Structure formats: C-alpha cells, structure tokens
Length: 290
Image 1 (cartoon, rainbow, N blue to C red):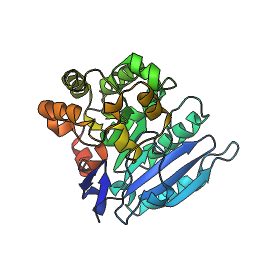
Image 2 (image 1 turned 45 degrees about the vertical axis):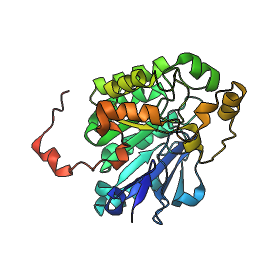
Image 3 (image 1 turned 45 degrees about the horizontal axis):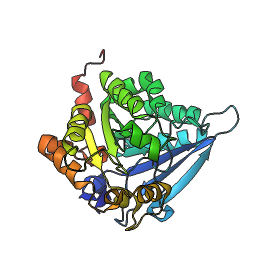
Image 4 (image 1 turned 180 degrees about the horizontal axis):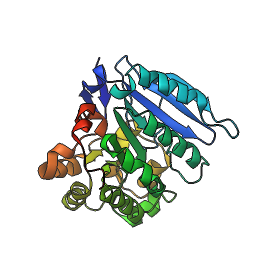
C-alpha cells in the first residue's frame, strides 16, 4: 500500500504506520492514515474529510486525571514494538499550540506521554510560537522529532491582509530559529501559499530564505491546499477582490518550488516522507549535552 503525502507517493507508510493526532480543550483524538491509499495531506490547520481517517478515537480528559485511556493504548503499542515503527503527526485538523483554544495543557500532556512511549518519529505541525514553551521536553526527544511551522508568505503586509489572526511572520521566523538553535529539526510548510511579491522575480529570495532556515520544505498553492479548482474560502475571496488572480491558479507554487529545487532540491519533502531513523543508532551515542 502506498500513501500519498503532499501530492507525492511514498512507500514509507507501507511498512511504517502513520497516526494522526489532534488536541482539544479537554482531550485528544487519534486516528490512522486511510489504508485504502487515498492518503491524508499532512498540512497545518486545514480541515480534513473524516472519510480519510479510520479508527478515529477520542480520549477525554477527566477532571484532575491524565489521559489514562490514551496512556494505556500507547503502552500496548509500545509493548508490542509497534510504536517504534510508527510516525505520529500531531496537529492535522487543529493547531495543537493555538493560544485561544484552551488546549495548550492537553498538548503538553500528550508530548509528555511521548517522552515515555517514544514513537519512531514525531512530527508536530503548528503556526504558533508557543511551541517553544515545550523546548525542554522537545530537546529530550529531538532525535526522533521534527516541528513543522506553517508560513504562507514572507510579507507581513500580506499576512495582515489575508490572515490577520495568525502569528506574525517575524514571530514564526524567530520560532524556526529558536527550535534549530536547540537542535530540533524544522520543516516549513508554505501552504496555502500567499503573495510574496513578483511571482517569478521574488521567488528566488523567498526560496533562499527558506533553504537557509528549514530542514524540510513543502509548497502548495491555495487551490491545491483547498482541493478545489475554484476555492471559495475567505482568503480566496479577498484575493479575487484584490484582483490577485494569479495566486488562485493551480500552478502558482511552481516558480517558488523550482527556485527551491535549484538551491537545495533535497529539502523539498515533508518530514513524514523521509526514511525513519534507526532506533539502534541511539546505542552509539548522540551529543545529548547540546
């Protein structure tokens, strides 16, 4: 079985299961990638069709108690050796560190569980600078962890116009650099891609910045991200009102993607597509004092 991630086919999931996890104010939901091969596009904060997630279970936080049911489930997977072969993607339909959803404590409890029940790979997807609060824990699991930051544009004016409720561009770049300074691998998702200047002339500058800061980069146009040939969400309507029709095309991402490929083609990948680290390598030691 092949699973499609970000529009490309990968064999990684055929032998290594992928669990998708979201946190809420009082609980966690967890599910598996659709084994029928339709796949789940691993994108930050984009709504997903429930049909693409099987075995979606909800673990509810009881007053004053940890997520005992989830802990037992993870303990069973760990005891059978399955968790060590599993990629866990945290933050698929919701941003686990969004500051206004009253779920930060739940997200932190979940991460604490994965320090004890280590998956083969943990990918955290967020746009929130609050993820850096988890740095002490993330440092302890950094050998198998990647944080993916959503960054749709390098322009603060564009961010204010089309996504005013999201963290500033500066805050997100600072988050990327802080994570990397502490040895955390970082991916950047330019999705849904928003205007960054002249679509050809300025693609090289944006690409150079992305390649300098990110270990992994994925790019999608607004139309690709919305899975519709004619997106009608609020961002698309604003682009239409501004007569920015080019940014609604299916192939809007190509100049930026081509510019990244010229600089560092190996970075054009979602971290879930990269071969999973060999847990046996930990036996040979890492620089834990970094």
